[in-house]
Image 1: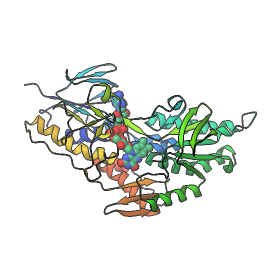
Image 2: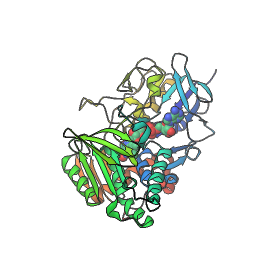
Image 3: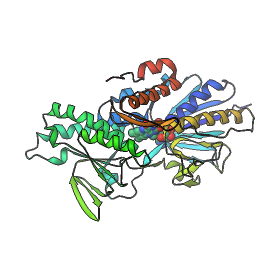
Image 4: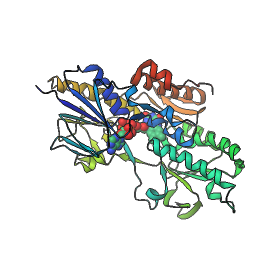
Amino acid sequence: MNKPNIVILGAGYGGMMTTVKLQKSLGLNEAVLTLVNNNDYHYQTTWLHENAAGTLHHDRTRIPIKEVVNMNKVNFVLDTVVAIKPEEKKVKLKNGELSYDILVVALGFEAATFGIPGLTENAFTIGNINSARLIREHIEYNFAMYHNDSKKNQARLNIVIGGGGFTGIEFVGELANRIPELCKEYDIDKNLVRIINIEGSPAVLPGFDPQLVEYAMNSLEARGVEFITGALLKECKPASIVYEKDNKEVEIPTLTTIWAAGVRANSIVETSGFTTNRGKVEVRKDMRVPEYDDVFVLGDCALIMNPDTGCPFPPTAQIAIQESQTVAHNVKALIQGNDELESFEAKILGTVASLGANDAIGVILNNRKLFGFKATVMKKIIDNRYLLKLGGFSLLMRKGKFNIFY
Ligand SMILES: Cc1cc2nc3c(=O)[nH]c(=O)nc-3n(C[C@H](O)[C@H](O)[C@H](O)COP(=O)(O)OP(=O)(O)OC[C@H]3O[C@@H](n4cnc5c(N)ncnc54)[C@H](O)[C@@H]3O)c2cc1C
């Protein structure tokens, strides 16, 4: 009898954890396990803002897939998914095609630009290793160019970050720490550099506890960050941005706009014909798509309503990792002919946002608020716990964050 083909798309949090769990729990004779990813490495998306700011080298963030996945048990395919054809049980890749009996879709997110003119062409986004590395290089290039222009160009030193949510604020925190080093390196007066965060809501970090938001803003303003809240980005031009606040349009010269104000699911899930809600697949309780019993979707591609709030769970690594547990369990159950599938239940352990390497805010179990040093330690514990789960003690020792005191 042929062994069933399990195909996992995407080696991010959701895909990697599902693969690692299945490689441990399924016997070699039970199924053929295939993982497809567009890089031969896994990266920790939650560290990309550090790579983009230049406070952490991207090699710390990426992990070769072969270091974590057992290549004797998993068939790894380095390729880009182009489309999924669920009626034919096939996945179209840039360089071929795969057939599956069970499919797991964990292709992550894309930036959502909401049709704002010029954003796609002129703004940067923090989406993967390549885009993060480009931002770091671009900022550094502009600092290097500053004293080489015949006429000083302030646009080289104005850095605009669109969006004061989690990603925008974490990036701003890293950048605020990086700028003094860059100024020293390129002989630039620190006071000339502007880090400008533009947020549409009345306050940054919407949904966070107001006391924590105030703490975060104070910490970042003390390091020179400017906040423009209640303002909408109207256009991103090659050398400036335009925002509107109180019915007035304001233009800021800048060669560096980083758009961090929205993500959507990888558009492959929509273009492949799955029914989507806000661009994501609203999965059943067992993480399968409504129309097909052999397709699971998780992570940022999946939409699950939080019964406590009536709103979807936000796209987080925490949720993607928890979902992988349910997906791996249910894939194994189907392979073993067991129709009783587990339902996903989120256990939100807390949320911690870093404000640079040595400051953070967070809420953990029972709504306990954390600030500063304790929150920083908690953030590193969360990061290290993931590494331990993914690749055990050796991965933790190689990639973990142990610089508690900085
Ligand atoms: C800067 C930043 C900071 C964040 N901080 C936090 C945090 O502190 N805590 C938290 O819980 N969440 C955080 N998040 C959110 C979190 O990173 C995402 O929710 C999480 O990565 C989703 O996991 P995923 O498995 O769905 O996708 P991802 O981890 O993004 O993985 C998707 C994978 O699919 C691959 N892929 C994509 N398209 C293709 C294709 N066409 N073909 C083949 N492979 C493809 C990618 O290379 C990638 O490996 C942060 C996000 C960002 C950007």
